Length: 634
Image (cartoon, rainbow, N blue to C red; front, top):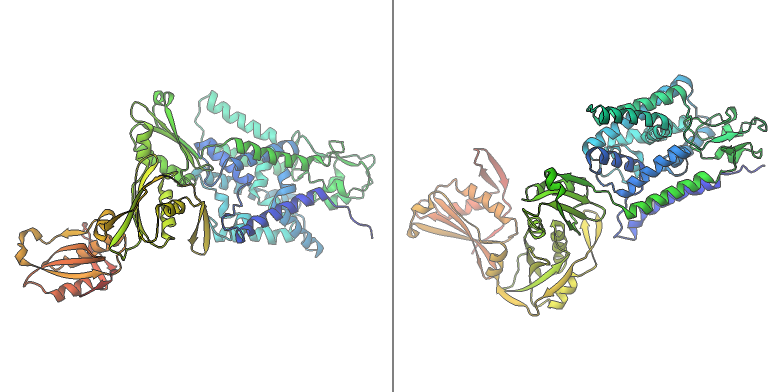
């Protein structure tokens, strides 16, 4: 039995990609700090991100410069060398090819021809239009809603729409089993996009017409019409000819003088192109995978541009990827670039760069930050860089300065962790570097929550920020507190997932000794006592009132909301006139003032122990809210 030759280079690259995806999928099992990101090198996401940036000066959410350069590498490859990504790297292309081989083995696979083949190609262009339209409109990757690859690698989580993803998987798996490369030929929007670029004359002609009309004739034409022209023109060019002409510049060529017409090349082609009938393989489905060259048993019949360059396509795709990674490491495209100052202000604008902005995670959080900055006097623009958690704030130096800008961003904290059970609370003052935004507050909260004996903390603006920590003084020393805050990482439980966050806090100064304050002083520092007067309280003398006293057993930082509901509820009794909290010893008490002789302590007790509070709102509406307060009585 003669051993069939294999396209080893292509097989190695395909398996390398699949093994890399598997490694990314499995790595969190032994490396809790690693977060799987299956979009990191996605060229299609990069193309969408580039389009949103060109239209609206923003990046699609979760996209970075790396994906953009991967998209550019794919475009360059499509113009010069055909659809190399599809032939060598695309995991869906590899999967559909293998599924198709199984269908062929069972003699169930069929190749669409004629009108059916040409007509079905409209679906991928329609999907391409829909994908780019909604991505550009929202700066969110619409492809994530249906993409079979993203659905499988994300476990159908994130932005996946289950119905869309299941349809996509059915088309991919079932379709490819029965019809040659069903997904790639007829439904893959990336295939449609690369075909548009490979048909470079069409692409550049449409682009040139658009630019002439917009720039020369000053006609306002929405980007939607340009997108429609690309997709419509791409479909008709493909459906009517199935050919590429000048571009790509590299194609498989056949020498008819030495060809024996054995048709091994036809059987080897994964796209079922009749290579043996062509002198130059300019079919639009050719990926330049070189399987036909490998399978050809006649030396020198099949080459690339009539030269022995079979090694060139895989080398080029590897070089382009490496170049994309290199360039992306040197450059970063801002996630958003929003400027609202006057032309003169922007010309004279100063810039303050803020690093370690951990709350800047994507397009949405970037826009929220920009909206916050619009309310700051003197700020005239914002750029955010998600990859490095950095923002650039443009400002008018006649109206503000960097310190005022930083102070406007910083939100002072008063974080109550737990209710202490000791009368003397330790307190220490310190300064923390690399602490700035709301996510830093969250991280510090998690650090202290995981250390038994910390009760709360406060922060106020400074460079570095000024903080006070409240804790059990018998458990901590200043040195131990410093080491806890300067930990390198922290593990945070999020449902069934453990997230490991890298920490960069540095304690620049800390008190050498620990002060002590009373329980009531501590509580007043973080949660001032609650006091609500109602039902004409001011009309009664002290001698007219009695007090019902109950201990609050489950006091938390959010208890004041429940107390507000309780006030609304008990105010239905017009002789209950005041609700107050007091801190005594290590206990928190509720004081309810009522008019002597008009209502009874038992009435008050029944009111505060109600299973639900009847809450009235200022607009006249009402609502029943569960009573979550636990009381104790003398």
